[in-house]
Image 1: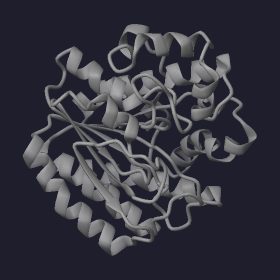
Image 2: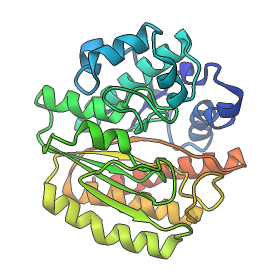
Image 3: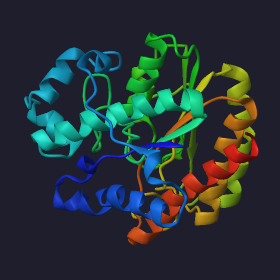
Image 4: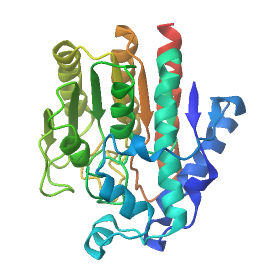
Length: 302
């Protein structure tokens, strides 16, 4: 099980976003401490090539972002102050998902401790997302003939609006987002399949909905690769989530996705997405169990 990790993920960020960003360093430590992973499971990505970013993003936007020339309204939408550290972090993050996707082709599952930046559009960033890591990686696999039909399963509490926009005219990529209806982004894009849940939905209703839709997604699109955005901001404890899953429910959510992939022998790359519970330990436990479930599932179906 290969996992993209780099200390650059923890470079300084604005004070109002520092707490959730700390999880990137601590999650690696937690996985090692629990014996879920070994040091050799982790890899440090390089920076992504500009031509690979152009597969999902407009060149003018990429060049303005990398050159620190974003317009003020774009900077406000993103929520981060422009800096070289931020640029380096994003370029590394995206490459981690690309390399992870390539590992998944041979190892069935791979992770990026960061990533899941699904609010980044082809021509702009939003909501603390500047470059869309899974969109770039999906386009990369298609461009190089390493996949023909891709399914993106986005189970973050927020709709994957940027991902939906990027692939709106690309039928070889099927975008699925199940999210809180009353949460950011308040103006939604149209994914290939959206399930907008009312506030307060808990384990039973959530898992029943997901159990019903997953087989249909695989049957309808027949993917040969899956990207999974596994944000844990669906937890009841999350400050911004508006859904009410327990840790056990979040674990079962992950199991449903990984089993759907493993049973059909479809490789999957997983980016961790959001998580804003008041206790950092809750966020780490939720993310850690995603790795545990993947390990269990893919051992069973080996």
